[in-house]
Amino acid sequence: MDKENLQENMNAAKEKAKDKYAELKQTAAEKREKAEKYISENPKKAALMAAGIGAVIGLIIGCAVSKERKIELYDHN
Image (tube, rainbow, N blue to C red; front, side):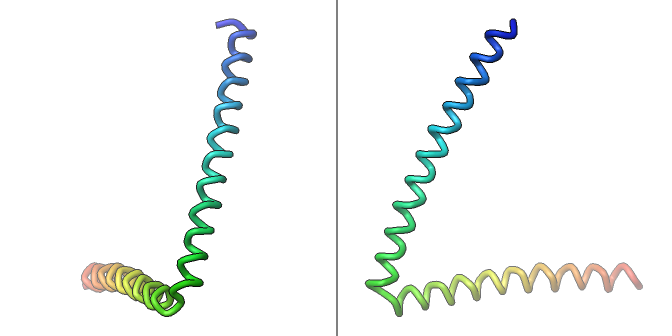
């Protein structure tokens, strides 16, 4: 592959990446607007959902840390 073809391929890849970035940026903006609308229309439900998700994440992290500590305790004996 010569230098000219390599440059063309690089330029094409760069344009494709720019297009994909713009597409993802637009999708993210739409999702954010949809979420903001849902939260403003259902503040109590949104708060409960967020609390529930946070509790689940906390339990997962707590279990992972607890298992890790148990492994450390067994390794020392």
